[in-house]
Every structure is written in structure tokens, then in C-alpha cells.
Image (tube, rainbow, N blue to C red):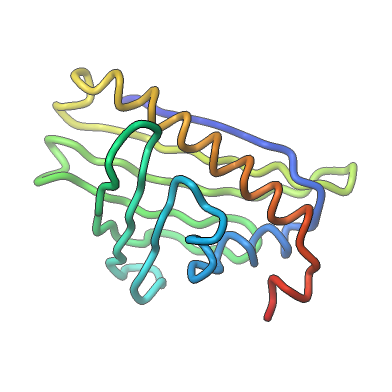
Length: 150
């Protein structure tokens, strides 16, 4: 098992961060890592996700949504060929802080026989997470709330 965990503090409410995170149609305008999310985004559904880690070509996955808790958490679970070879559980979580900001956590938990051989992929993926975190913070902190909800 291996994991990537990143966090960023965002000035805003959990609702504002959630609205920006779940507005998949706007991803091409701001998200440098998750280029596309498409499909029926509900627990148990397969969705289409296109990711582009730093210095890599875009990769398309069809994970299953495993959790949606509005204003708190969104998770999907994907695999390559079989869970025994490679699987990843991608997690976005939002926690309100006492200082009027939100702690946004962006994580992935990897398992399978291929994990020990993918060291450079994890470093590039972590940079992709960090780039998305920064872009999400910029989006939430600079856009009027009305724009996010329209």
C-alpha cells in the first residue's frame, strides 16, 4: 500500500469549496490535473475521469464513485486491469477550520502488485495534486460566490 496526501488551506466556506470542486464543467477553465469528470456522479456509478500528472500525457480512467458527502467528501475507486495489479482510491475532503477557512485534503491510496514499480509516477502525481490544490484555492478565493453557483 502506498499513498499520496496533500493539503491546502482555502479562505472560504465548505460550501464554496464544494461548489467549485463539483462544478466539473468548469474544470477545463482552471484545473491543471483533473481535466474531465463525466457521467452520472452518484455512489455506485462508473464515471469517466481524465487526469494529467506533471510531465505526462493525459490518462483516462473509469472509476466507481464510492462516496459523496456534500460539503465534506468525494471519493472514487479505480483499477487497472484488476485490483490485484493496481488500484487507487482518490479522495477529496473538506474540513472547516476555526479561522474561517477550509482545509482541503487531496489524497490517493494505492494498492496492487504494480505499486512498487511506479515510483516516478507517484512523484509526478503528487505534483499534479499540488497544482490542482493551488488552482482550487485561487478559484475559490478569487471568484464571486454567485459565479460558482450559476
